[in-house]
Amino acid sequence: MPAEPTFEQLYQDLEDAVRKLESGDLPLGEAVTLFERGTRLAEQCNILLDNAELRVRQLTPRPDGATEAVPLEGWQNG
Image (cartoon, rainbow, N blue to C red; front, side):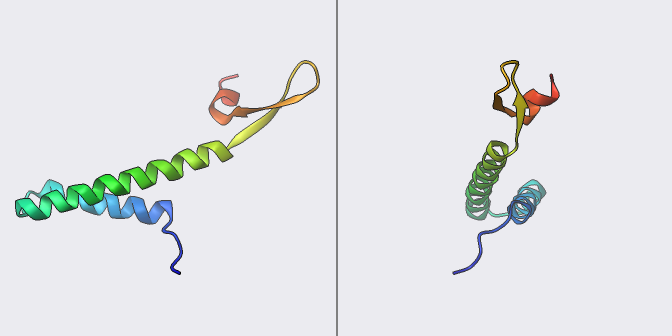
């Protein structure tokens, strides 16, 4: 079974699709198909980003000595 594409591969494919759509040199049917593919690629990228965000957490000590998982952006903002 082939390996799942990486975020970077999906993003590159999405950029390629956008570039082709922006060129405006496509027949309507091909443009619609490419738009649908781009939409799926964007969804896949968002899923991978959401999963990465869930994994990127910082354990921070609370005043009572326990620790809690805080999203990294919350940790950076103090």
